[in-house]
Amino acid sequence: MQQYTHEYIKSIPHLPVYCLLYETYRQMSPSHWHDHLEIIYVLEGELQISSNENTDIYANDGHILHKDEFYIINSSKIHSTNSKGMVKAFLIQVPYMYLDNYIEDYGHVRFLECYDGEKNTKKYDRMKALLKAITRIYCKKDKGYELRLMAKMNEFLYILYTSYSHINANMEKESKQIARLKGVLQYVAQSYQEQISLKTAADIASLNQEYFCRMFKRCMGVTFLEYINLVRIDHIHEELLVTDDSITDILERNGFTNYKVFSRMFKAQFGMTPRELRRLRHYS
Image (cartoon, rainbow, N blue to C red; front, top):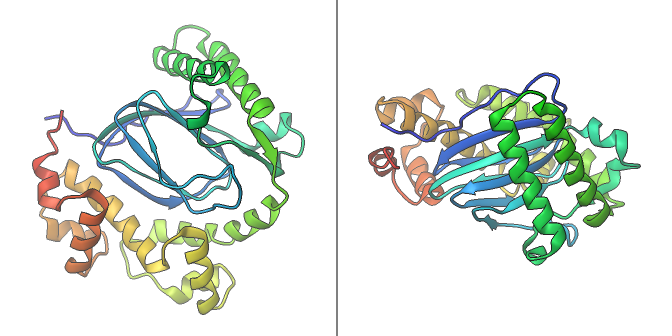
């Protein structure tokens, strides 16, 4: 039986960037953000990437990433991913501090995210070739591979910075707004299996409940309740693929009490029912 889920490859402690090769089947990752710069390079299949900030021309929403294409997710950029079939991708996360050491005023720098308009250019082809090389080097892990990998990585970042970056004066304000939600997202990640209190979430963000709800929807693109349910559905999806437990047990274990709401949201996300997903989990 072949099951598709995230294939985690542990990052080497002395490698300054984080790498992950993964396979997923009809997987949805709810909206989230992090300080790292993220690079997603698709090896097989198609991956939808959505972002909820559309403040400048460097932003993009609902982009479909195809095989042999890459996408850049800026630091502190809220984003989500969704795959309608099997996807194999290589993920690179470059820590904020690493970039801040080399790029002046990095906190206000934004990189181009979508490269559809750059295809067939020499710079785009070189960046793609570098990502292919980084993926191959990381997977083989030959002697001294860290040196070769970072040489390729730094060349990629050099092209990205010198050719596809600009200064965003609103970055500091935007980052502060998003940072207020960091504790809330951690709270949901830790408590999604239990009953989650709107009051507790608003208190974590130091906001009254009404303003918190408006701010959450503006920043995350969904209501707070919708976000909680999307996190639960993500975990339920995983368990449907890797266990034979009953759907009822899985829902209860992950804090979902309304089956009708779950069924509607699940089908909207994955285009099929949980039972249909299970019948297809031997996908190859």
